[in-house]
Image (tube, rainbow, N blue to C red):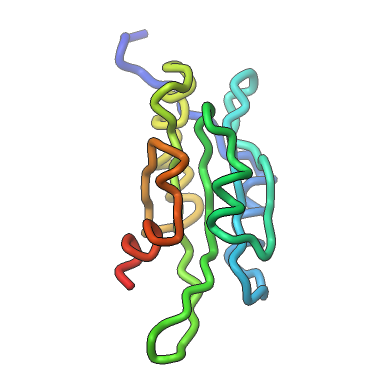
Length: 141
């Protein structure tokens, strides 16, 4: 085993189904699917699901010292009156989280992103950076 290898966690069938359900949800509010790594099993599992949540509430619900993957369906009101629901993949990896855990999350990120079929992927290192202003800037509003 080379020193550069990273354990890639498998995406469980439950997560695959949750991602699919989330992608096709009918809600007209902001929602989030929070995923985490189960270190023992080396799997990505569902942590929490939120309906009708604000970006601020989402920020408050995430653990500040552990990485998480967040799939966010964001209710975006445009200046011309249209409303869209961009799906975003947010990879939260706090600087002070466990190095091995950071590597497991980083190593599994691409596979999960592919599974979720999400092109908008953003990374944050500080939880307080996860704000509506930050998200709108990323979405180019």
